[in-house]
Length: 70
Image (cartoon, rainbow, N blue to C red; front, side, top):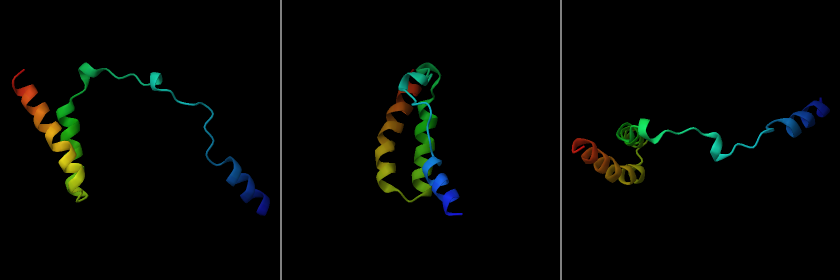
């Protein structure tokens, strides 16, 4: 039993491939930042995280005005 636990502890979380930023395919033109910021604001409210809300609110307003006057 002890041997099984040692094997599990030593081989539990092994990453065989080291991810790189170049592995991510991000198309900025398809990203809806207004929805992203809106989601983050809702999560901040749900978790009573005033600091997160204060962080994302100006970005939300900036993106809202940018899309409105597009």
